[in-house]
Image (cartoon, rainbow, N blue to C red; front, side):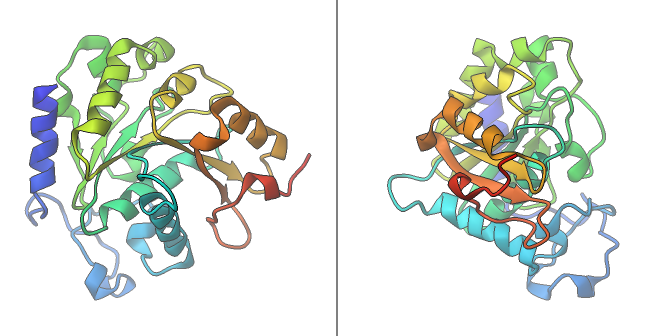
Length: 268
């Protein structure tokens, strides 16, 4: 693990991305307020609202979620946070990526964003990285993990992509090696948050293994699709104390809102 943390420490100390390392984004500068402008790649996925529209209602919802996580009413903030959803296409990767950016844009916090959806990885595309080796290659073939860490165009945000789609994702993510990695990463630095994008637990078994070692869980639901029973089933599985919140996505009102499960309106 020493080399991994050397790589994380290097990213931690490097607050600025040099202009010659990343091409300039083509969005008109007037779209991004001057105090929020930064060096972005030529193509930024439109889902990255915390980057492209930092003063939008959607971005503000992520700041609210971030503050709820960083400043809990009781106890210490959760350092490792799993993002999941009851079923596919509910926006969990969208939430994971934008939450990671929002936290990383804070003054003191650093973020490691991990794509643990080995069956259908998405995060690398949101940050304009091509397909390549990642977490699965480290777990399956012992490829050096530090070489797979991606320094994003956001200060203090590092991405660990999912890597090659393996034949045995459940076994890899349920392994002792994976548990050790999660424990080490989340306990190494007190100013580092680990955001973990995981597949829907109703479809895979590996998500439950990850849930046992994280500090908190955010459930993403799709407005008009996810049922109250689906949400309550996940809360029963993981326990209410571990659930940080339920996020309503694809709403006709704010795209994101902190939505208590007990008030979830779709009972079908």
